[in-house]
Image 1: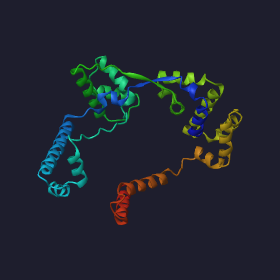
Image 2 (image 1 turned 180 degrees about the vertical axis):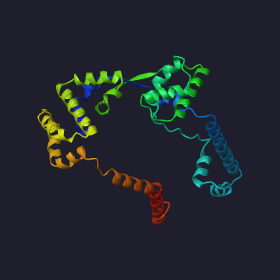
Image 3 (image 1 turned 135 degrees about the vertical axis):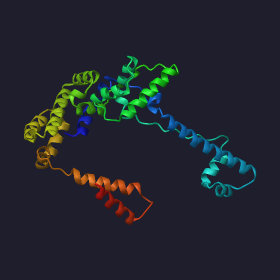
Length: 300
């Protein structure tokens, strides 16, 4: 069952869905922990900035001597546009820090903060705890997170388990429905129960969607006909249209739910080829692309 169909149906009840709230970690920009750098990286970052400041001062020094921008670019082996940007700036233009995503550790930040406040300081032990909860990242990420907590404690910053409340949207609701029940938190289970109580159609929709997902995971294609009948007579126009469209290619869908073969290998090869092409776009010709494709194939 297409997630887009479910999201479209929930979109009819968007205002009611938004009355349900979920607890989530604070925004990444509000937490200095997610941008904590190791000392060696921080040192390299400062050294790189010092070189740029030195170039900026050299550009202004040569401008005062009457040299043209083109001559300064040749003298300092810089791009002419960079020379012009430095010359027109009254102060050194700092690099803009681009916002980063929450990262793979973000769903476990509240748990790690709570355990830290309880007195747990062992990085290996905490890594094993979050790994048991589904974390698939590296141990170093957990250690850097703890370094950030220790730094906050030294600077007198309260390292509380900060959370914020976010509205449930149709897309977030679909994401919760796609997850296994054992992977949902208590708050997420409550949110799904509240969602089902909004309208009888939503309750029926969620039940059908989860049945289809389970059928896909377990490859129980023999249950497809029964599911199609239930979805067609559910009284939801979007589901009826989805079933009608699916029945036009039911044999292929049935095979996908039963057989172990798929076109995943072909799609993977196509994706790999596209990645190689895009990574060298505008830099080389077909000969190098051919060598890279054959080299990767040999290594694989």
